[in-house]
Length: 393
Image (cartoon, rainbow, N blue to C red; front, side, top):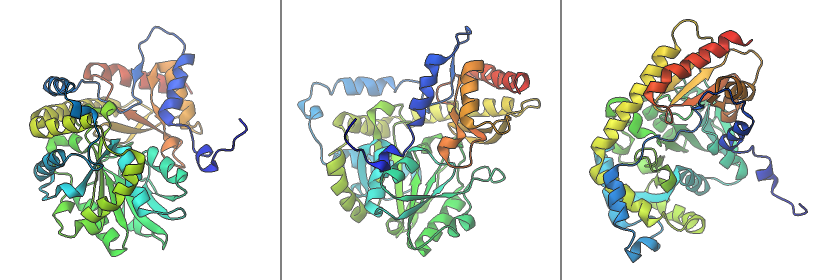
């Protein structure tokens, strides 16, 4: 190629899931079915009544047209009602911009807050798309260190030491991707107070907020009358309603913040597809019980995996877990996460993600996702980890 590409994109690593799935073409055929613990995608279909409802909308010409950039007013109004139930929040439709997945909502938040050369503090291990986006935009990613002792829960005191005059935001994902750790409401309140005191934004990615056990309220930050001065939420209904291909994300912030973010929204995507908006509206109006049932199922998967994984004799160690994920320390010394993840594919027919794609110094870890694995397959998955750690040095 003779044209020159931006070094800010050529220097970014390949999307990790794409990289890891390429290994499958080289995997020896030992007769075992692959156990996919790689991508956090629900293995169940959307609710049948939602699908039927959407099918009835395809003949309506409006379904194929643009909506307002921020989304249809009636959809955002229905989402307001959902936030009242979920968070006890009293929000306005002007607090929402519906986006092409949570990833686009994150981009909107960052380009509204930051310029090239600014800094964002990111709790490690970090969902890999976030540092990738920051690097592409020329924004410095400052990692708050992971603590096994704290099971991946952020430390407000440690984070405060990282704030400089270039810091524009603090980013936390809860429940965490990749650790599964659920940051307690009290800690989130401390981070909110810290961000407010230091005049920076708290960006909270809550993509997995419907997979907190027993439907517990994630936090009460929206109850602060000045929440919009500090708090920006990135969220998604993709995992909630098994709509990952619909790209059902949203940005939640003050009305002024949204009005500024819409300048980028119009140039990025114009609007979330109407069919996705209709799916969201149907979901928030009708599927609370369906969502709770799936949350219970995912909690059972997690609990069974944890129970079996931590039994004596497994040299892989569970460092943190919860919601959709487990964060596991591998037992192979100086081997990188990539090397161990590749061995797991070749020797145990297990697909996972290496720790180093989630931040520097994390080569000793792997991320496992429960979305693709049935409860009945979990004992076999754990057995394969045990056999690999015993039979291979």
